[in-house]
Length: 286
Picture: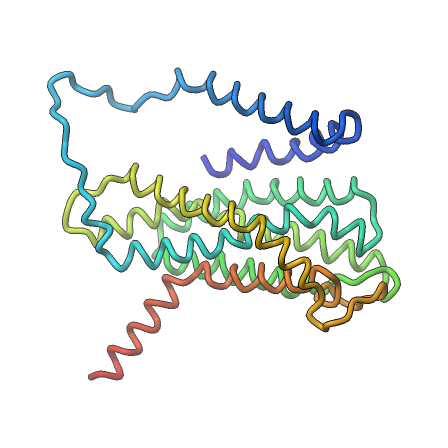
């Protein structure tokens, strides 16, 4: 399911770019709002449970005892923190290419499309790995892969004045591939998260509710990352001075935003970190 959502993202950047060029931002956003509303309403009649509800079934009391589990909150914390930075590359990569690297907006659109394409593969692979291994280890894999691609690829892409534009294009293309694979597959770990919580819970688990809370946590990061990213852009370069011949991405006005994206990617593995810290404390207390 999470891989399928990225299929739309492969073609959508090109369609959005064409609409923005032809109709402007106001008309495009209004059309997108209407399209989203209509497609959502038309899909509602087809959303049915797998097993029909028995007419004689009595309403069951909602069990919220899983909210007392440390496992749920550590996994949810990593989910929210990761979402603070997850949406920033697809939002700012096109403008980074035009203002810093000096490439066309079409190239930025292609990289966003590439990011979504590799998210399809990443979503499938991360989901399959969660079926075989502990979800905390898969979250660690996703987080490390995402962070390294941000720090070593996006962060090292320079402007044409300080290096070859081909090098910058190559680095940002690799960034779109690897970040799309590792970060784009993060949501596919939710099935493993639910399985982990169910294993730690001694009661029946409302899997739909847990799934909704995880999606809501990701939504929190999505909303907050908007105004937060504006503040990060205003903060500017990590070096304190921005030049036209910035040698790396960290030296541009996007430097603080790139650093923030990498750090939030690392903390997507907070559940693994918490488990490691907790085991160390237990060993030290013996």
